[in-house]
Image: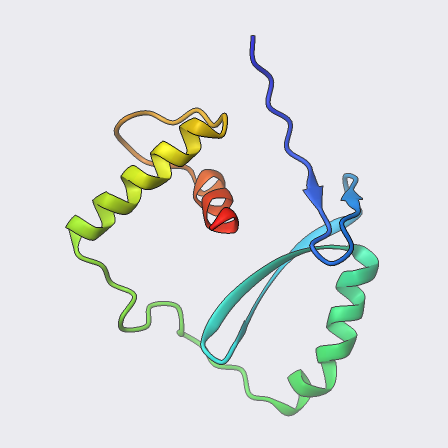
Length: 112
């Protein structure tokens, strides 16, 4: 039997986040997307620090599918093979074909 345990850790101070005491925040800066796992306290610090800039800024909708993000199917299949190989080597259960879960993709992206 194999049991896999995933812990969420505050990316800022390394604290293990217990259930309900943390969150993942996604944000973008200068065209680049970021994601950070934070304790509730550090998440509030981030929100407070950004508040004056957010209130002075403009919300932009529809930025998800920017040009240049499209890949050829050959490139995409090579990336999928790399993700599968990485996942299998790190204890994730993934098939040799088919869809790769968002959880596995996100873990792969965080490690690279």
